[in-house]
Structures are given as C-alpha cells and as structure tokens.
Length: 178
Image (cartoon, rainbow, N blue to C red; front, side, top):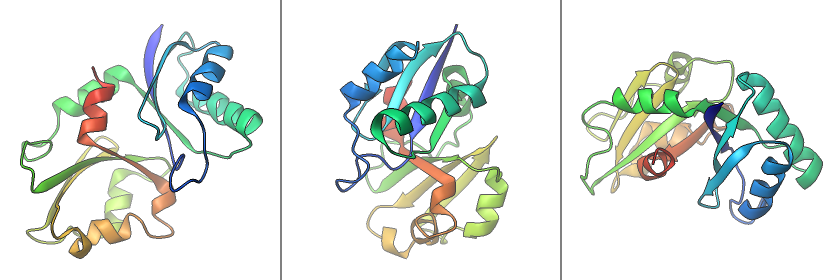
C-alpha cells in the first residue's frame, strides 16, 4: 500500500468551489482510501491506497468530487515518497528562514513539462525571483515586498497558464511531509 498526496486546485478560494474538508475526508474514505488526513482548507490531502495507478486515483477522486459536490476540480496526485525525493533536491535558496522571501513549489497539472511552463512564463525577474526545475516541478522564490513586479507572479496567474498549475507554499509542503 502506497501513501499519496492529492492537491485539489481552486477549492475554497474567495467563497468559490466550497468543499468542507471533513466531508471530503469522509467521501475519500467511502471510496476506500485509507488513513485520510487533510491539511488547511485549500485541498491538501494525504491518504493511502492499494491502487498503484496514479492516473486511476486522480480520475477516481475527480469523479467523486463531481458526483458528491457537483464540482469539476482538477486534482494533482503525487506519491509521498516522490515528494520526499523532490524536497531533497531543492536548491539551497529555497525554503530558507529569510522572511523577505516567499517560497512556493509549482506542480504541473497538464501534459506540459516544467520546461514548457518555464518557456511560457519566461525568465524570472532579475534580483526579485528565482526558479529551479527538478523533474516536473518548479521551485520558485520571490521577494515579498516586490511581488507585484515579479514576472512569474503575474504570469502564473494568467489565462492559459494558471489552469495548468497548482502552487503550494513551502510551509504547506513541509506540513504534508510530516
């Protein structure tokens, strides 16, 4: 049995796509996922499954959300061990205690690669943000005070790119790995 993490994109934001985490947990257990735990109200779920097919798990969760909550929510599935591996390859500048920096991890939810996303977004703003690609994730750090001047800040939220990604903060990622 493998341990997984599901990141649900775009739920419980500004009163839209509301799903109570207690209801989500109950429904995931109903469809035979085990040891289900949620973190925050933004769709971060840990669970175990006998199914080792990530694509099937993703479809099963998305189908359950559509059936039970009436929402078409993209889900990104990642094995717990894979996230651990990703974090061991984080660049030294990512996830530091520097309070002037904001650290995110970008997960690709489309058939695009991390390199494709980097090409779509373009270069990070010099001296304001940094990116680093490992496998199919992007480590991204930017200056908190100058975020509105950061190329990646603007473009990752733009149409044609935003729906291809789900982004989590370093604190959320670390919490999911405990």
